[in-house]
Length: 147
Image (cartoon, rainbow, N blue to C red; front, side, top):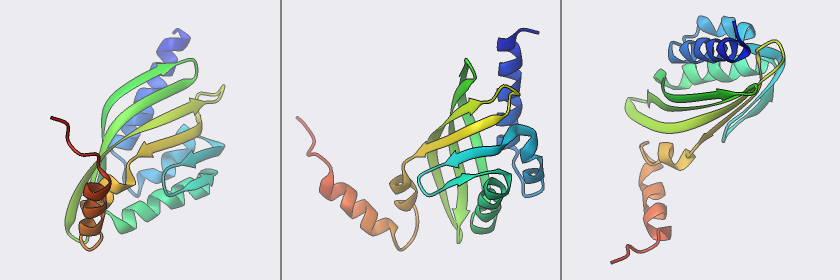
């Protein structure tokens, strides 16, 4: 098996895990992540299995039916990039937020750096209470349309 094939299989297994993530499957995290892996997103910056598991456990406590639908993936030289759509509901209000992930893998093929990029305002616009002010701010600061 070539290195490229192994890397592609590693990435596919990881993304399949994310696409089917459950509170029970969080215990499989050490299979995919290095012990001291770093995870960052617009709200969090944590390191290590316990902290990453806690972050996802919190997601399952606060979001109803969270799901990552993987859109595209690219792998090369111990790095990967994937795009996805995260869906769920908060207090009965459904949302859908597109995002992307940059991953770096160690020599054992486990994630050592995971950085998610997504627009937090895209989520906030869809939620009750804070959605209206966020939409107003967006309209207020948007450039006028060109003609």
